[in-house]
Image 1 (cartoon, rainbow, N blue to C red):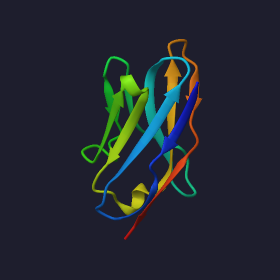
Image 2 (image 1 turned 90 degrees about the vertical axis):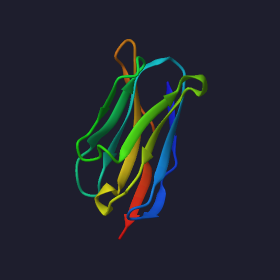
Image 3 (image 1 turned 180 degrees about the vertical axis):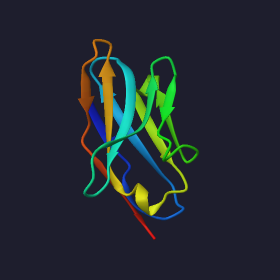
Image 4 (image 1 turned 45 degrees about the horizontal axis):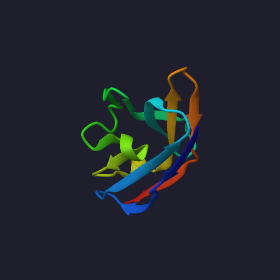
Length: 113
């Protein structure tokens, strides 16, 4: 499985960004995003299952949404009302039916005040 993340960049606080993750290889049962703010640990952001069940971290609930496009083998993270504290390297990840987890490369999101 290969995951390719894109869409990061520099945005002002209050702005929006959409991250994309293109998946290839085996079908994924769970797809999601995690992030690592500067100097801190990796943290969960959002996930979506093949059945459409969604889980969103409390810190971004109401501002971020996760979606998937099965036809394109891709999934997305729409980030609205961005805050400075959302600054982080965002990683996409996928879990296969067998439970194995794969990670994409990170994409940097920088939110300026």
